[in-house]
Image 1 (cartoon, one colour):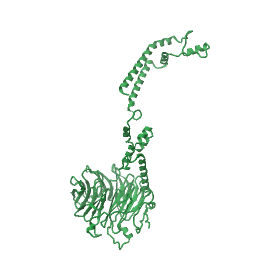
Image 2 (tube, rainbow, N blue to C red):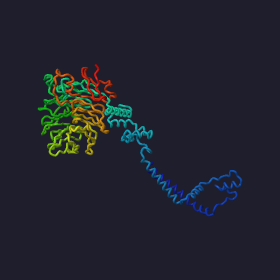
Image 3 (cartoon, rainbow, N blue to C red):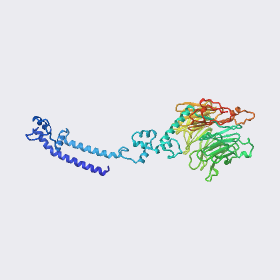
Image 4 (cartoon, rainbow, N blue to C red):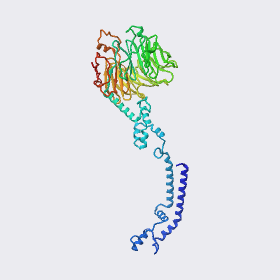
Length: 598
């Protein structure tokens, strides 16, 4: 109802009230005279009304006396006499009721969904702020709300927000609510398999005459470098473990077995990078072939290597130089930036999600450098006599462990710096042992996990700058660690891999191998672990049998928890080794290594 209609309604109502009040004032003297005169019996021939007419008819002997119908004026007069309040107060009350009714009519325009009709697009825009529980409750209100709450746009948006089918479009499926329920059921099944140790485990194929030097993985794709100079890549997502060799130029120039060791390997979704002991760097494009697309040479041994997980940016550190490599618009690799530092670089990481220029963080002894491609090297942190023991970076923060030395031992800490403000945000921990690993990039928001030489895994709360949980996880120092929203996976120097439910402070299961755990990475459905030996001495295959060689070469294991069966019952090719390969020992019955069929 618009404003003009309300004004017209108010005017007509007030006119009717004024007419009724005028009629009541004219009849008020007549009513007073009748009350003073008292009750009057009707004369003969005169018709009585109401109760008097009924009494007169009974006295005259009539069985059903005629009842005269009261006029409208008499009914209004009787109603006015029966009211106990004065007539003036009743009129004022009626005026107040009218005003209240008009106010209620004005407020009806502000009530959503119930008394007015909203456009469907506007209702969808309102419902998009609800989660799955609130949408389920709204679907029980009415049929109209049920149609809105089950719209495909809302459930597609929920799937994208929770990370289900991120690369799909809304037209790929007809019922996104059902797809969301299936994804939730699969997520529950994966979590149950993690807890109950259900799945398949495989030992990736090794090179008999070489020792494992370094391992890295990204989204289920594993790269490994050996003392023979060989580099291999496995794709564990397809269960195809016949890994190809990435060729290098050494095979044409040098004799077999004379190639330098592989120092570092890194991989992302499109590139594979390997650094060798003689200072050479090979870059392969996984989409084009197994031959390197670029080769770079340093004058000295490469001490640190970093590869961006999002784009094609490679950073290397050799001697006192740090070099960033990046392809130009035509695809040719070139030096994007070069920096000179004061000490030898120990750790090097590329900052993710940088828009224009690549950014890296490097540690050299007790110095921490912030390296931007469009600027010179800037010192982020420096305390004399306190070397950095570990490093990890996120999109806007850097976390590194600092070892305290000197007469006054303040305790080893982890410092968290803001890369934008270039200042220290928090100092975490106060441990006697050195912090050997820290994971900031893969941790949930406002949390960070670290490992220490005191054999404990610590979860730090970045909001309160306190330790949220401390786990005694290993017999020796912790060498690798990672966490998500409910579990922690850690690897130790003694070769033990432990899985914890940190919400319950409970160890779920563990697996043991001979060598220290140097690489550990997991997703919601898979786990990659690498046990790299300290000693890289190549043993002669003629003087050594397989069992002795196995203890020295290092191991790479791939666990798959999307299989809802035990490893011994799995029909998937959980192990692609040859028939003469001995079966592995297992310290966990539910994840026993499958024997080969001969």
